[in-house]
Image (tube, rainbow over all chains, first blue to last red; front, side):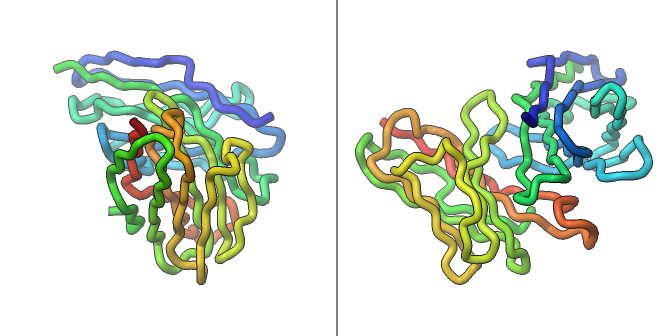
Length: 115
Length: 118
């Protein structure tokens, strides 16, 4: 069965420090991987995705993520955190064998950046 | 702005009433998804349209839920005889094609409709 795990409910980082939000996945075929961010009372905003090619993917707002096939992980990173990065972050996976193109979602990680 | 709009943004209703939500997706795309999101959780897939055809429904979608997409444009999600457990954010998503293999496109979400059942 397809699944996504975000092992940390909350991550606390001081402003200016690097941040990492973890994601691991399980699919039967090759994965397409996505990160979204959700601000309070707002819809989900797309950050970045991995489809194929370079394992390091760069996205919006200075975020990047690294695909690691052997560890089945797709951790979200940013070199220097901003207070405005505080939000809820969701990892999602799609199995490329799934003809309905469904996204399977993690439970989310709350990121808190302290000044 | 993702180009996906939803109406209303908020709906408060009493248990047992019927409610209907509308989604207007990115106009040129033929696929449309509905999700439900409860507080502190990731979105859960409800149903999916390709043009007018509803191709898949989650087991989460009880008989009280129905969705339509007439003419393959906007979509509506109706909940009949609402229950308190239906309180959630209902999200609509529409892909923008990346021009590559189907399934590689990104889903863009509307702002959601927050339903509160009293």
